[in-house]
Image (cartoon, rainbow, N blue to C red; front, side, top):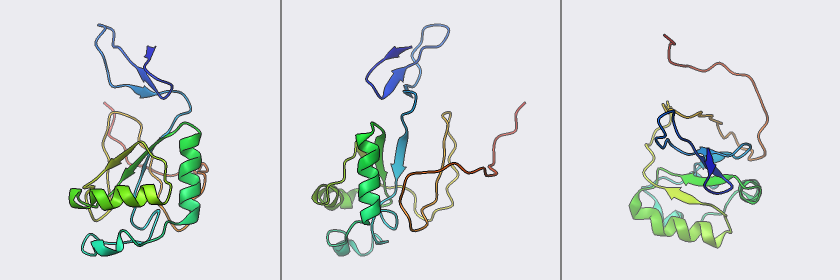
Length: 144
C-alpha cells in the first residue's frame, strides 16, 4: 500500500493491479443529506426557499468539526443539478466546510446501499452531534 494523501491509501492486489483507494485509519467519509438534516426539509418543488433557509447550528458546528479533524465531508442531496448553484452558494454563505457535493440522490428514502466497501448509516432524528456506538441488526448477503 502506498499513501496518496493523508486521507486515502492506494491498494494493490496480488498481481499488482490498482484497486479502489481506502481511507486511512481513523478517517471517515461522511455522506450528509441537506434538506431535513442540516436545514429545514425543503422539497425541490420550492427552490425559492433554498437560499433563505437557515442551517441547524448543531449541524454546522459538527460538520465543520469533522472536516477540521480530517474526515471527508460530502453533501449528498436529492436536489437536482438545476439547484447546484443555489446549494453551493448557501453552503458557502453559512460557512460549511466540505470536499464534495453530489446532486440527484434518489428521493423517497428507504435506501439499501450495496457496495464493496464498508457502509454505515445513521438516521438523523433532530440532533446533529458526534456519533456513538450502538449495536443493531442489519441485512447482509448470504455467505457461500
